[in-house]
Image 1 (cartoon, one colour):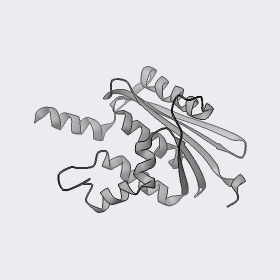
Image 2 (cartoon, helix red, strand yellow):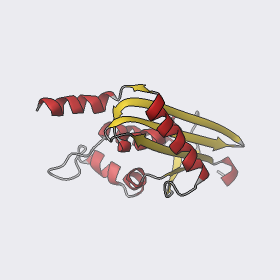
Image 3 (tube, helix red, strand yellow):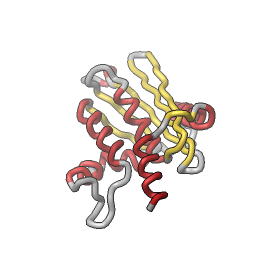
Length: 165
């Protein structure tokens, strides 16, 4: 695909209190068109929202596409670009013999959608004036602060089990 056919995707995630109310923000730009996506969750983590922002951006694409996805999350970029997520999946979602990988439900979802598209991940420094990253930050934080009503069921289930142990 030529560069002009590349979808530019931007994503960010936020959690107030971490864990606490959270949200993601995503921005898609293609062929002069822009689409913003965001949602808030009542209880989640920053890393889960960082992952979900990238996932939602990619899942919003209607057909396989060449994508440049920019995020300020090294967790997301390194998990894909360094092959960590694929390694964890191959090891039954274990980081090593003693530690389970965190957020396997979202890593699985991200791996699946990345396999559908030609995605290049790009890390950008957060809060550094990058216009699209700043916009996603506003979307994520606004969702976390004003619309945190969705339930992050996998996270809340793990939290509930941990509190009973």
